[in-house]
Amino acid sequence: MKAGELFSKTLPFVWAKLLLGLATVLISAVLFAILFGIAWLFKTESVTGIMVIIWLVAVGFVRFALMHYFGYLVKAGHIAVMIEAITTGRVPDNQVAYGKQKVIERFTASNVFFVIDKLVSGAVRQINRIVGKVGSLFRAVPGMSTVTSLVQFFVSLSLGYVDECCLGYTFYKKEQDAFKSAADSVVIYAQNWKALLANAAKTMVMAVLGLIGITIALTAVFGLLFSVFSWPGWVTFAISLLLALAVKNAFVDSFILARTMVAYMEVAPTTEITYDLYSKLSGMSSKFKELLNKGREGLSAPVLQPAPVLQPASASVLQSVQPVQPIQEERPIFCGQCGAENPQGTKFCGSCGARIGE
Image 1 (cartoon, rainbow, N blue to C red):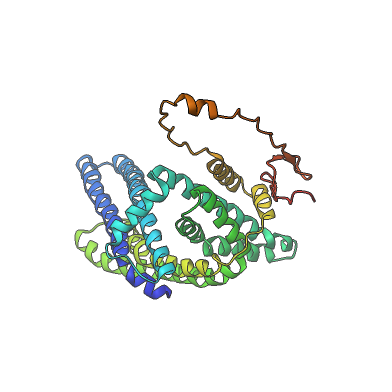
Image 2 (image 1 turned 60 degrees about the horizontal axis):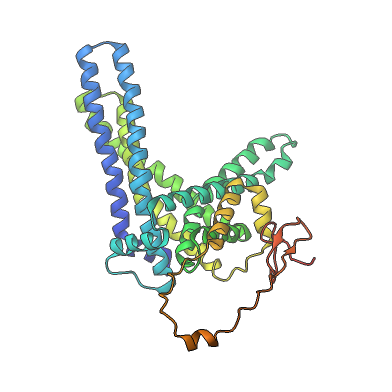
């Protein structure tokens, strides 16, 4: 499925994101009216300055609360539906209900999704930071420091949507632990970052131009409207920027997510994971190491089965029971690289990823 088709067929989530953004703007406008109404009553610059600070802090808190809780849940449902559309070629009839169901099935509780999202985004940022530092080798060349700084910024911004694709992979690999799938998705990104960067470069340009264009258009419209009420110019710009961010988060970001998700899922299913990358990425990223450890904990957690109901045995049955032979305990094998203990039959070390026996 093409990115444009994927975007158009998942518009219910786009509208949901827009409503969240508009709710942020509405609450910010109400807070502005209340706080600056108080400042107008006192008519002193000191009170006005205090109200400005309170308003900015309140707007930041409202935006964080709405976009980082409800926004995360909407994003998770959107990603789940996108993965279903990409892998099967069809979109569920009731997308919102389907997305909610898949998020509950995959993560059980919303706090699990928040933890995985934070670990994946942190791991991707740390890896991107190291990738961006490749150009630091040329800082000794006069005039190259500015260029390398722009390259690092470019890499970070361009690959800013990869963490959401990694979360999408957890829905694709639904048969295994969510933390394990998330760790695998980061490894897949690390193996294919060059190919993904080429696609991300185009999306980055679209995001920047989209935000600038929307902000300029809204500032012009609200500038004319607010001039009637003689409101200061910074208020016009602040409200316009909040509206521009709402439109960008809903439409521009969703389209870019569709493009990046399609590109990621083109390489993810066919990528053979290189096991030595687990140890390398653990050394590069503390967040990835934590994610990998949680995945191993999930794999090693015992599955409790209900105890069978015992029936009274007859004497003949008891006589036919043979004595239980002692079970021979399998001796563990140890990794030659790091010395970690592994169960019999292990091919790769569970601690460093090295091949056992080399």
